[in-house]
Amino acid sequence: MAGAAVVLAAVLPGVGHADDYPSKPLRFIVPYPPGGPLDTMARMLAEKVRGSLGQPVIVENRAGAGGNIGADLAAKAQPDGYTLVMGAVATHAINPWLFANLPYDPIKDFAPVTLVASVPNVLVVNVDFAKKNHINTLADLIAYAKANPGKLNYGSGGNGSAGHLAGELLKARADIKVEHIPYQGASPAQLALLSGQSDFMFDNLAASAPLIKDGKVKALAVTTKERSSLLPDVPTVEQSGVKDFDLGTWFGVFTTGGTPQAIVAKLNKAYSDALMQPDVRQRLLTMGSDAKPMTSAQFADFVRAEKEKYKEIVKVSGASLN
Image (cartoon, rainbow, N blue to C red):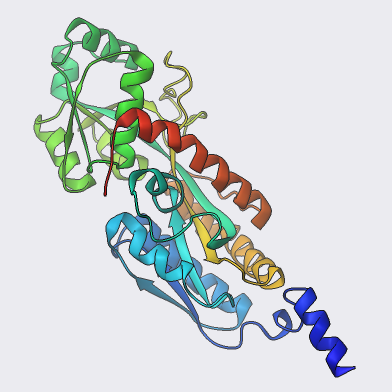
């Protein structure tokens, strides 16, 4: 009978493992520096799932190489559910097309647990530039760019960043000529916009919302298919007349590929339940996102679709980080 149990456990992944999982603390890697939205949400969720899993969840920041260093640590961990990573659109959908020698496979090397949030970016313009040139809508900005080819510039957090890719997609879809200025991160790009060194940028909605509210920048459009609850009066890029434009900054929980499905299911329930708690939902609302947890299978399909979508977008942008 003992032999039969061993064979059954081998045939059915997770049998004989999930019942006592977890029996020790979990490691939750954030592949970006402390203080950002992914880090903040990872720490909040770590506290929530600690109660349901019965073990501490220790958040560890391992930044570098656009998120690749931290993601690679999770990809190469033991497939036992004790190493998690807060993956993102960059690590799992954009970087595969930016880096010629990505050290991990974003599909094969991970077991998706659940999406955490999908947050729009927002196209914001310098207020003095907008007033001087009567720029009140995205259509106005496009018309100005067409009348003044090469005169406009936009800033981003760097080559291959979400803001860069959104800018290049706008250039392609709207058939305009504008110059890209890459900065060393989103904060310097935001400061350049405020000072008038750049004319517009695609910024993280949560980061720009206070500036928009205070009238320091002017919001023209959000990048997702639906409007944001934070900016209900601001149309989407598609509603502004630019077709086939749907970009968002998303992040979610992954564990190592090959982890038994029963363990992945236990993690999915713990994180999904945490995402529906009122304080977590409120935190996501301040980022412009609703809590919409997915099954692991739904999240896997979502990641595959996002990876394919960004293949074209990165190609259009001409960005490459080798």
